[in-house]
Image (cartoon, rainbow, N blue to C red; front, side, top):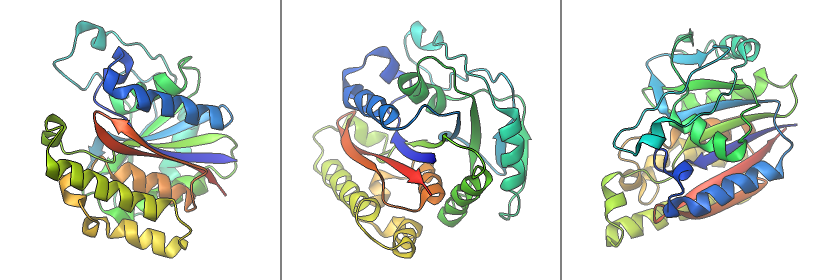
Length: 266
């Protein structure tokens, strides 16, 4: 059995620095990790890597990319010495071909904080090989659903692979500074309620996919996501599973309601 998850990964390195606004997020990630067997490998699609192509990191020992600024020195000394999975990466390179955009290997870029921050919480031993795949910069929802499908097909011969969509179900940066703003609260709750209806009720696969394709028409959608990069990991994670989640939680992250979902893949 393989698994897929969408997580809201919080603000930069703050979850690893003991920030109070990430307490429920940390608890949820630890809970999700406890609900499934320890993965043999993890495939991560992070909001913090988007490219004009689809890129797959094929490095055997990928470095970390501290892609944030303005944090204490300890944020730049975080270690997560996880290895890559070059053979799996090569299989994914092949499996993702034919989606209408080039699929190429990445041999230099480090794993960004959308990868190492949640994984350091879920699997602190850093002993599970990890492959990162980029988002495609046009943020086409259909393409990202198809990416998830292709990833799932590529790993069907494997067992206990976790496909992790690492984004944030609310990502209006200005609104994070407006804790009591009525529009922010209203839009956040409306969009989260829509996500729960779409992901965690017994809709058909076709209806659920159609809602995700038309996500911009959801209540509060464009307020919560002025740009799409933190939502598209959800499309990849759901595309890999296409079922009702085995675990679904909405918790407070940085004073905003945020979605986490875990699926067992057929």
